[in-house]
Length: 105
Image (cartoon, rainbow, N blue to C red; front, side):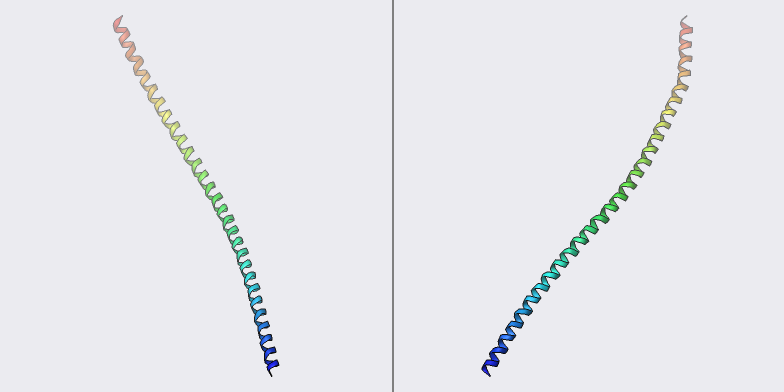
């Protein structure tokens, strides 16, 4: 009976060690799997962020081009307006110069 009890205890200890080793191996496997899933999630998030950044950069470029074109158009319109005003004023200046010159002679 003592021999059977000792054998049962030894078997129980062996099973307990095996269970601990199995649990440890399973824990390591789960941890490695979780780490890999984390890496994949980060890589996916980075890839998605790059896509969104590219889209936003494209939109920003398009907006900048529109703004630049609008500013260029406004500048050209302002230059044209100033040229027209200068041409109108030029006629008045010529007329005033003629009056001054003719009055002196």
